[in-house]
Image (cartoon, rainbow over all chains, first blue to last red; front, side):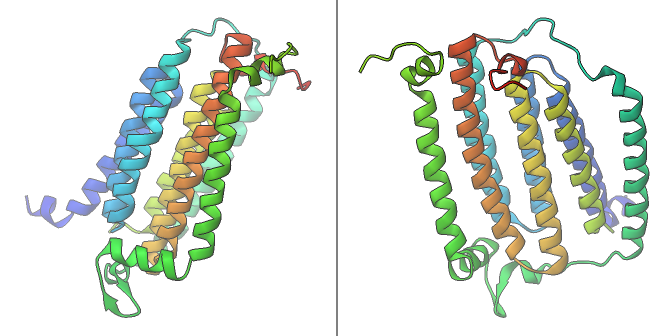
Length: 190
Length: 100
């Protein structure tokens, strides 16, 4: 029991990380996109837990609200709208490169293992206080992020809003029925 | 003690899974979901280093990444709708008019 209490953070990280990876594999492995979407929801929630473990509480809330609440619902909406689950047999190409791909994967795995080993030797702890302080003044995490966002990163913030606007206009243009017809070379009625 | 290394390793694994999904899957919707996995891997990295260095800039960058992910989802799903209207499929190899 003492071991559990002393290492609670580490145990929680390993459990959450394992669920995250398993759910991510499920996203890629499932044939049915709806199953993939549900696995993706699990991944998003687990990543939000990881954010909380790193004292990014505001981002955890944003993660759940925007990803799990917004983007995922958009995905489910489109999956149900197009109602195509089975693609049928497709062309197989580059299958001759499979041994090369396995070799590349093994090399990458070795590099990652060496990197983790070297990294854990130089490990240092972060500080919780820095996550909630601006210029030495103690605030909540949300307030601190807000200060930084609007004081130091105001111009990038405005640029990102333009990116969102462009994406919104693009989505509307793609979504128009005559846009698809024009792409097919058919006459578009005015 | 869980350090930044653990988070970077997890982010690396997530990124690799997402990359495999983007390269292997034929279903356009699954490919976009794999892209979201990769965005999440980037965010984990940013948060880990934000904590490690005691700098909130990483969290602000993660907010921007989430915004871009939302924009990407809107555009990508618009593309899916258009592809379904034109070809009645979500298989990526059907969209080969550009000569790929």
